[in-house]
Image 1 (cartoon, rainbow, N blue to C red):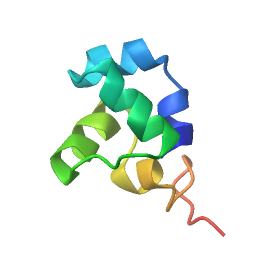
Image 2: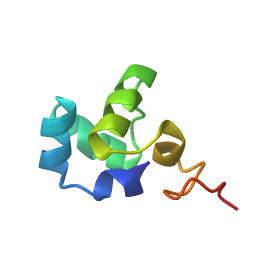
Image 3: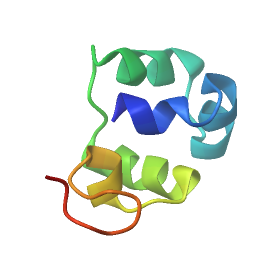
Length: 65
């Protein structure tokens, strides 16, 4: 999840997802995990699916090996 978050600046993602900068930093470091509802907002802000956000599928939609 941290890798997907790194694609935007922390500030940019915080604004797009309407969350605090501190929350974004914790998710990126992996010290906290967002709730399911927040994960949906993050995926929307990043323009990806929940599977891509979680690292289950690559951005091209292919299963990760």
